[in-house]
Image (tube, rainbow, N blue to C red; front, side):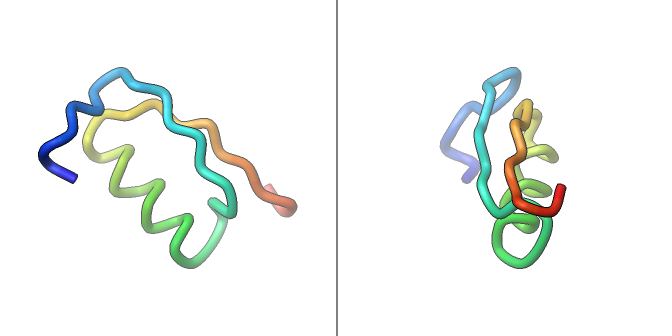
Length: 42
């Protein structure tokens, strides 16, 4: 993911409370992205 400039970009992630969605959310947040998280059990 390092080739993408994510600082202050908004990223929508579905299935974000567990598994792969959670790992992706954490990685993107660490790179400076702003997150819009969607899940049935948020």
